[in-house]
Length: 386
Image (tube, rainbow, N blue to C red; front, side):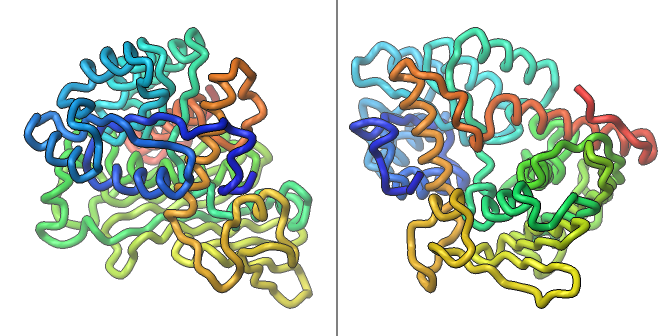
């Protein structure tokens, strides 16, 4: 589905609310507006009333629909004829569960940042509630909405590289290095708020979900070693992992937020018995494709010229006109609007196969805890079986 085609979603924009006014909310807002599927009509952008009102003015939200308490927001918006139809939760990890439950109790569809909760028990309770309500519960993994990620997934599914035999995936950043680099994000190093991990839960969940999505396979087991490679802190800023897929393919994962010169280095290399694919989020429009005894190819995002249908459908600009992460967020919000609009018309959303949902969110929690369990046991292999 094209990011400019509204016909299969609804005859109007859907009404969206937002909880959380930090940096991540602005990434959401870019995708929301670019998708042309939503109107942001209400928000709780801070728990401090004066700050919430100021941010609402900046977002051009009606002051009467600016809230400092998400519980009040859920109650009042659900009572309005023109109330919000979905809520985007852009807050620290430890708040996701309570906010999602509050809005699900009022029949409002959920768009939640990862991890959806800090404990398996909370995640499973959310999954049961989701099952009881039948609401949409989308989890925001925007990287899979880059066209060339979809291209890689469809090429692997078509057998272009043969059977997956090994892989490596990494997500490297530098922002937590240096002596004062985490001053503005202290909650990420507070176990009461971030959970059992820091970097693994923050960016590792993206790498894990991306790997399983592209390979159309699941991680069977893993072993992990956590390290503090930057300034002294409570939780890890670096993790090294070995993983094994359900088909037996071995691979590695490297996660760090203290590697100088690394900005948003989410990258994968997947090797099959016929060829390989490699992708780098910092160069998202290119996919490297190589086969044994053949010249390598660099496939560029665009229309035609070897592009798979799913990747073409996510492309909005011709080659040479750069698309970026904001376009991926827009593709994600387009897909979520399709799910919400479909559910609200009383139709099944089962066919919306690419949208990460509550089950993916719960699997992300399992990944975090499996990695933490392995590290705590000295790097022993831990099963990812549910």
